Image (cartoon, rainbow, N blue to C red; front, side):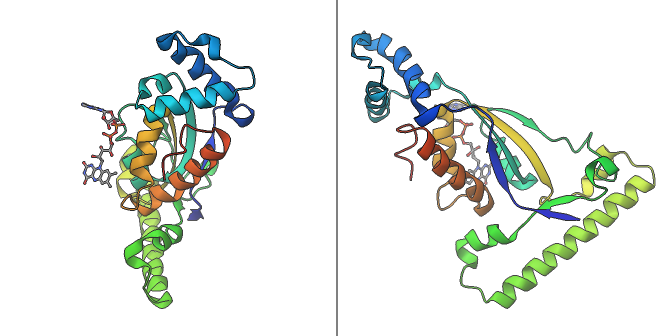
Length: 222
Ligand SMILES: Cc1cc2nc3c(=O)[nH]c(=O)nc-3n(C[C@H](O)[C@H](O)[C@H](O)COP(=O)(O)OP(=O)(O)OC[C@H]3O[C@@H](n4cnc5c(N)ncnc54)[C@H](O)[C@@H]3O)c2cc1C
């Protein structure tokens, strides 16, 4: 069994300072107001215009955008991600991937639970020994699931049948493609303090990076 960290990779190229992304929205959005004459080459008019759109809740204009992100998360988290209906997805298949094969390392991959525990507000005051005992129990369950998965395959089960014993912690790659409006909705829900700690783990990190790389669009999301 291999324990992996959760993470993400932004697949869509983003221009320096997010200038081109904002200018595209500006070019399209200014059609509404016939204010194309206000466009400046340096990108400053785009920042101002997009800020105005967001403040005025004229968010339909920021739908003229796309952003693809590949996440490495567990299947519990990916199940929450696919509830976002205004997005497109591609996910590693437990029907076609057979974790007993050399190609996949002949072991199951699981996402480390420790960072999720650290972010769970209701577990923060627990003594270190209790956390350790909980993690130990989790690890035993993962090893047990792996043992049964491999045994079922050995007995002739297909991957799509053996997957029934894979745990929620099984690592998956899932790519989400959505426009900025939908990403804003995603971040509002998935970085909130009541979101699941493991979806917060990757979503807060991604939001912070996007705030750095594309100004204005995500600035108002805490
Ligand atoms: C803290 C938390 C707890 C949750 N707990 C549960 C739970 O216990 N059980 C459960 O089943 N789910 C749960 N969910 C998932 C939740 O119900 C949503 O499915 C998920 O958050 C996607 O939200 P969304 O509908 O806003 O997003 P999207 O599906 O991406 O939709 C984006 C926006 O488009 C609009 N929209 C989309 N579809 C429609 C439509 N058909 N009609 C009108 N407007 C639409 C809405 O404005 C929506 O906000 C939970 C989510 C969170 C954040």
